[in-house]
Image (cartoon, rainbow, N blue to C red):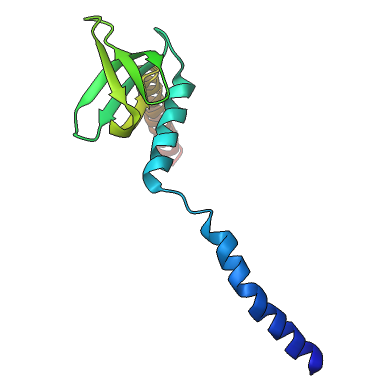
Length: 131
């Protein structure tokens, strides 16, 4: 019985210490979102191959490639008009990378569906003739 009471007393004394250490680990959700945006832009890289579509917090979209980056903002340059747009990381809602594979992916999906339909029709024709 003494050991249980000593254990409970130790836990009661250590409980405030765990709250003090846990309180220092809270992060601001806005800074976490900005860090995620910075990581996405950094993964894209810089140059003509770093194409992206940036959706801002106000709903506008900017398409182009990442021309340069800094700690607080980055520059998107439109490939057709060659105009530069400086965007702060805090103003970005989402970053979509444009790698150019969406058309090829859609064609392959269509070919796969077509092949499945043809194979299904052949199977049904063979099954009907065997009856």
